[in-house]
Length: 279
Ligand code: PAF
Image 1: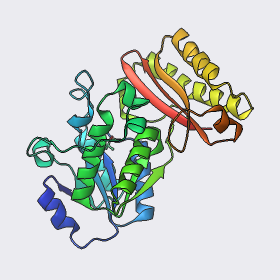
Image 2: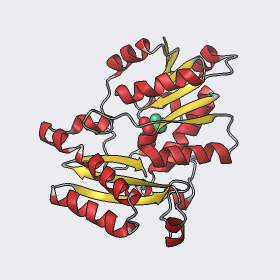
Image 3: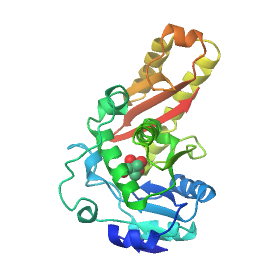
Image 4: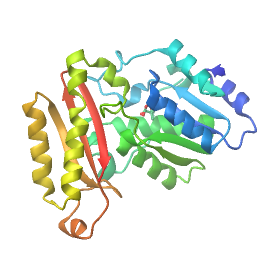
């Protein structure tokens, strides 16, 4: 595996490649990321990964500084997956001058759910993803469904900007007890780690109740948040949305069996976890 940090070296390595499959990451790689690499391999060749902890997508009081950086272990894992090039730019490589041009996601999609609780997050994500796409020029790029709203925003960005990159969705990779794998799980204490799968259990309960015909979505959301709060969680939202645009379903949508997804974000101690489940 070639490890490159500058955009010029990356372009040299990938010159003439027409079927590059790309997996952008922030490192601290776990099985979830590796499943994205395997899916990428099915859709293109060579597979290119990036590791870059993108300051633009962290709020002033978020965990940019303490975000886990495990470069040596990450390299070993990517080698085993047969990744051809790892692009690991420094901040100077990717942002040699202040990144003043930014991508602005549309308000209805960018300012709801994660966008409401993490202002500026999606601008930071789409700006870096567009820039990484410009560096790697992939024909396909893989994103996990764990970050459901991120995936949808990137997909819409690729479509609206007519990017020549097909966006591929990978299923969420879960531990045996149901907890969605995430780098932030590493912040959990032993007790919190045993409590953490309750988030997925709540999503499952909501999804099953809706599937069984209970369409009183507001009560279901509130009851699930209440149950989490009673167990000591601090929920930001549990929200049933339309899969198509992540807006709240109207009574008419519900009557017409609109495809739904339930999304959640909640703090357990100091760790903020997110997850979702298609209904
Ligand atoms: O999902 C992530 O790890 C990040 O948001 C991404 C897509 C690599 C952009 O920094």
